[in-house]
Length: 418
Image (cartoon, rainbow, N blue to C red; front, top):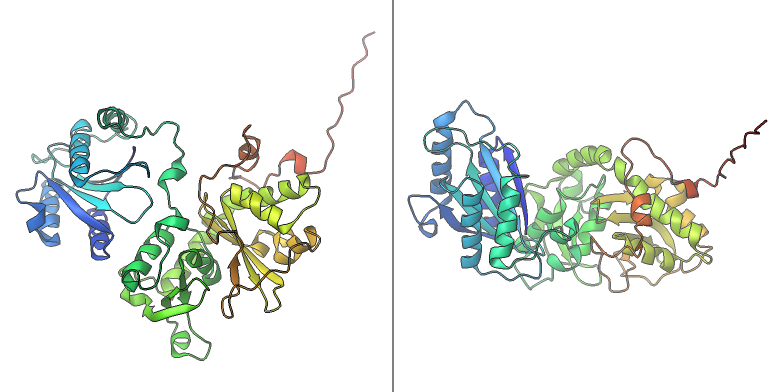
């Protein structure tokens, strides 16, 4: 089990984050601890009112909200009753057992997990100390509960195991579920997690789920009015069903919303460029006969999905890299000329560059053999951890691993002893 705690000053934001998940059909409120009524007979106004009245007992305190998530291993199947029991005991063990709190079970990821919303202010108006609560009380509680309920222990588990699993968690199949809810679940998973700087980069990720953000043709009313629709795609990459306006989703993921994220993401993704660049460079450094398929296999092992764009003749003219570990998306040319589609083709000596077309309209193709994006946390194929060390993001400058510089080590001159 993995427990995460966030202390902040936005009670309503934490509350409505979970309530909106209920409206989208990807969550349910399973418990209201220390509430004067049964959660099954309450509405959101009543549920929020209890928390707001409690925080009003100490209005001078800004950081009054505690938002917790309890994440379980994907292999575990837990009943609602068992989750309620775990949540109740966890709150007791961290010192919040007597606080009013709400427990939500979410279904929008590849692993079972809960969200808990409560307040730091007790019923007497005193503040509950949360300093080092994640490191101390929460860690002890987690370990006790893992033993008591036989849960998969967090130690030894990769953090990515509790992250987004695009290939399996929420790939949309038209007609299988209500279109708006299905698209909303994808947008919830992608929009705030991935760092993209253009509509094309965002669509490279969305297409992994059979979803696309569409502005329409240049002459359309939607395009001229800066509008945006979201659509479901079939397995051939063709739009199916009725397009849904961005403004109809509760997140309001309009073009203006996306453009604001483009600017923020441009800065946020910079430290992670080297991970992709070094993966590519190391492949070409070590490969005797470099091929596009060989490069793709190496990228997949590092959790990076290359999405190719091709013309009607099947010739590669564009490439986008989706790094599922760092949640960053880069068009090839934004990494540098040597990582563009043209340069990659030349470095592969033209081998395997001509590919079969995906569809008449799509022209964006994921070249993974099973048409699924790489899974975060996939085996790196480097038992000694050398690649992990070399591919770690650089946060200060764009340092290059020594073996990629092509420089020779200088020999030290031996001092003569007279």
